[in-house]
Image (tube, rainbow, N blue to C red):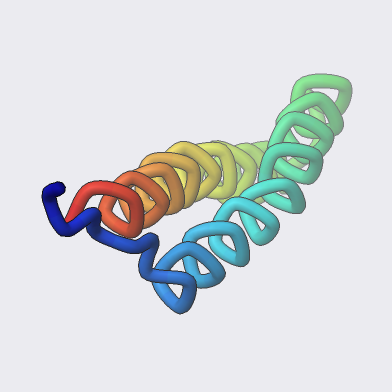
Length: 76
């Protein structure tokens, strides 16, 4: 029989935590962008829109990083 590799549980936990952090950004980003577009005439329109877009990009990054960590825990 071949020696089966075990799942790296520490790396798996780190990946799950990263995905959990992404949940906050997934919810917050669209809310901030929506509020920015509801106040287009306000002088702080861009000051609210830009962080909202950055939060959404952060969510995408955290999702990809979390999935990468989880897959590494299974296959490395």
